[in-house]
Amino acid sequence: MKISALLLSIALAFTSLNAAAYEKSLKHKSIKVKLSSEKPLTAGTNHIKLKLYKSSKPLDGAKVALKIFMPAMPGMPYMESRAKAKSLGNGIYEATFNAAMGGTWQVYIFVTTKEGKKYRLKTSFNL
Image 1 (cartoon, helix red, strand yellow):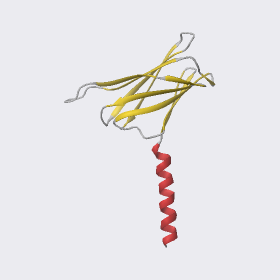
Image 2: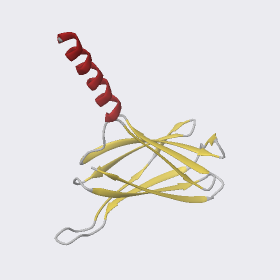
Image 3: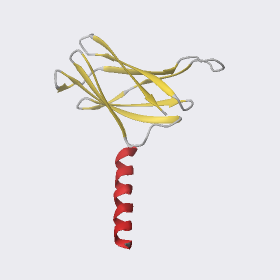
Image 4: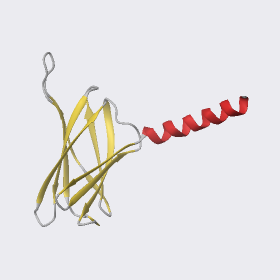
């Protein structure tokens, strides 16, 4: 009885560890973006990595910016956080943004390739 309870506890611990990270994939035309965070996204400061691919190859040399916003609602003003992502090489970029409170946040990712081609990808997340 005690062994099965212990095994169940271990299984639940590993399940919650895997669920803690944030991951999402987006695609627009020939651009694919994989978003990830080592920790769950929360109200406050968040760090996120973006892996960019163009035609299935890592996209280096791009300018990447994020706009995270929550539209105005009755009794609550519009909120926004902007971030420029820093290149880490091999198509990986990193950004830090602030989500002022819990709720549904809209995310726009602006990608400008070194050739000047512009892309905008959209998603959202809930805190």
